[in-house]
Image (cartoon, rainbow, N blue to C red; front, side, top):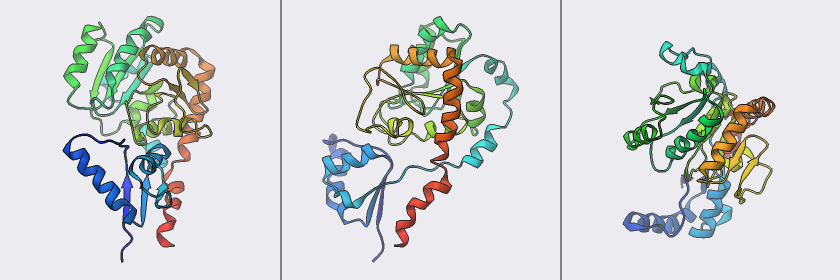
Length: 276
């Protein structure tokens, strides 16, 4: 008699491969329609459940991940440790996430090589840990960037780093709803993101068709979307953000404005259906 709620935090496309994939696919098709509600974190992911796994549309509800604006703003004001202050006196491009195939920091490093040709004093800060750390450090060295690409590891308070950077970039191959993008925006940081599936478009261009995928560079209302996996376009968009002061000022304001839509005070109201 309980209300069984299924929550989907990522995205999976059919057919799913391997034994694990087959088992996962079977359970989705067999049991999700028996749930009281399937809560998904993005419209793209929700549509995928319906089209590829036969989950009934009336069972699916999209509720975005919430962020705590008040707490983030408080933590963003904390001072940087002395070891980081010199680096952040330069224009810093920052990325954060697990150092994995999905998060694809290699493309950011490759794009940064082009960025350095246009913005000589730029630095790249990468927050996070993961199995590709040594591989990414090797790539930086091979490209002659070892003095300008800084691997800062896992940080308990990433927000103070966001608050002191110039641009946040998301290079993921896929997402559900990229929480880190919202956290960076809550710090008033302008963002450049690959238009990957799913999430970035719904965050940065909420009034556009969420099924679109940009084939170049899109200057969306709340940030810049770039064709997925296009290193050249990613570098062009970041350079534009670093050099165009009017654009930077506009999107700094827009980032903070959009982040407020995801504040927990607003998102929590969407769970009222539990009491119906």
